[in-house]
Image 1 (cartoon, helix red, strand yellow):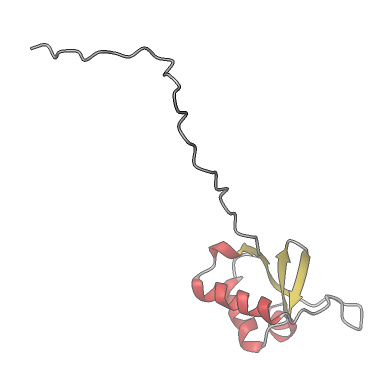
Image 2 (image 1 turned 180 degrees about the horizontal axis):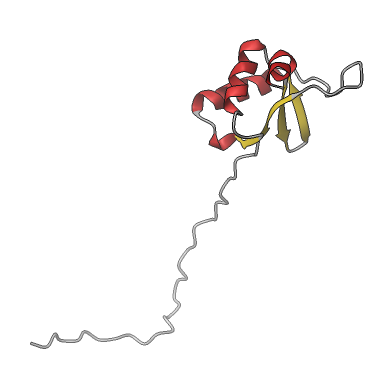
Length: 115
């Protein structure tokens, strides 16, 4: 199984528009086998900086391949990357204080400290 993955494996990338398959070169396949040695699927956020750069570069080259080959067989999958869009925090506008409104709480006078 490892030999088949090393020889002809593809990387499955889960994107918001569906699964895409990328065929890396031999050295990249060997490195991806090492990355996925214990897991079949990983979110991109858990990868190291070097590994994330590799995935980003492979996706940016957009050399996607069809999963089925001529004989109707599927190519072995090296691993699956869950590529999620970064969650952005919603920015709320600053609230202005209401002018001329009185506080609903009664004002307290200064209390003397007892000795």
